[in-house]
Length: 193
Image (cartoon, rainbow, N blue to C red):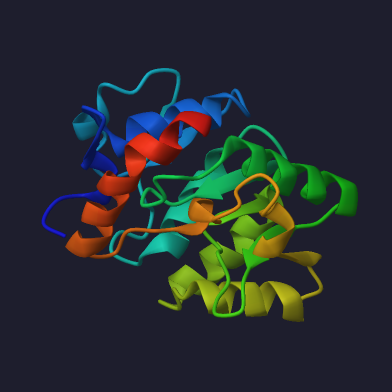
């Protein structure tokens, strides 16, 4: 998209600033995974961690973040989700605790959302093993967790419609058109997040 999605401006501030604020409403341990921490100097009350496997995509970020967390479970949140709801994230975390799950992953009829999920710290070792072999697909990670007996709980996005009736929390930006659409929706939907 030309620049890091996390730094795209929304309401005069980078998207990552909005996301960090939302995460800080849920936990005292927010880890931002980046190999360019100096670009995020404006963030407060967060810790930074570099990827141990640069260039290997989201799984490398998941692994690096999980390795650094202080708690036994953590929310994993991609930096391209402008409308993610704190209420939905809270529910996903609650499900993880109630089910004693190693991962809680939302899904809909077309896909899973593994970077808007909760993972236990112990899943980090599996991610590490896969990344050492240059196997960096999130789908492969989830498959190996399942095969090795980790408790994976999938939750339909439909269960969150009462909080987010349009399910915009699951809207991610992958193209300039997605960004333009997000900007057009921001004023209408961002206040309730």
